[in-house]
Image (cartoon, rainbow, N blue to C red; front, side, top):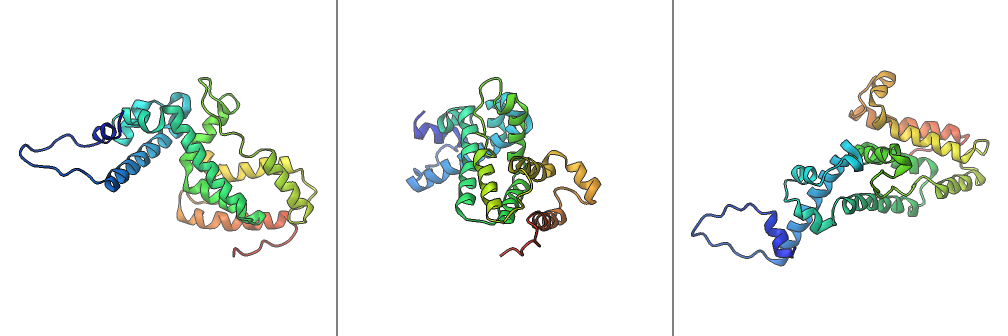
Amino acid sequence: MSDTAAQAADRTPARRPGRSRRTPEASERLRDAERTRARILDAALAEFADKGYAGARVRQIAERAGVNAQLISYYFGGKEGLYRELVQRWHSWEAGIDQAGLSFADVNVAYLQATLDQPDLMRMFIWEGLTHGGRSSDGAPAHTDSEGPDEVADLRRRQASGEVADDVDAGYLMLALMGILTTPVTMPHMVQRLCGVEADSEEFRARFPEQLRRILGHLAGSPASEPG
C-alpha cells in the first residue's frame, strides 16, 4: 500500500460534488500518519490487555482505532509488529530509567508510577506471563524477561554498596518487588479491602509511592530519603 493509499484509507470518504480540495502538505500528511499510528497503538494495547496476544484480533484493533484494517499491515506489518512496537516502547522507557542513575527507592517508585499510569500495558505483560511462560502458543514475541539477571545484578551491586540490606537474596527481593508493583493492577479489589481506597483513585496514587519509599527505606536499614 502506498503512502497516498494509506492516507486515503483513513479519510472520511464523503466529499461534496463541486467542492475542490487542496492537496495536504507533507507536514500535514506526516501529522495524519503519526496520529493514525498512535490511535492504532492505543487500540492494540487495549485489545492485548483485554484478550492477550493469542486472543487479540486485527479486525477488532482496527475497529477500536476507527481505521481500515489495511493500515495495521501498512504501518506495523500486522499483529506481531504491533506487539513488538509496544514492547519496544516499554524497553525504551526502561533504558531511560537505567541511564538516569536513580536511587533504589526512586527506581521502584518510577516503576510503580508507570504501572499506575499504564495499567493496560501491565495487563498485557501479565497475559504474556500466564501464557506458556511468556510466549503464547501462536508465537507471540516475548517481553524478553525485563526483570532478569541484569536487575538482580543491580540489586547485588546496591547491596554491596550498602544501599540495600545484604541479608536478603536479590532474586527473591526482585520477586517481592514485582508483586508490590503489580498488585494494583492484578488485584485492585485488595487495594480497596486493605487500604480503604480505590486502586485508581488519586488518594491511592498519592499515598502508595510515599508508603513504598518508607518500606524501601526500612529495607535499606535507614529512613527513606525524601524525593529530590
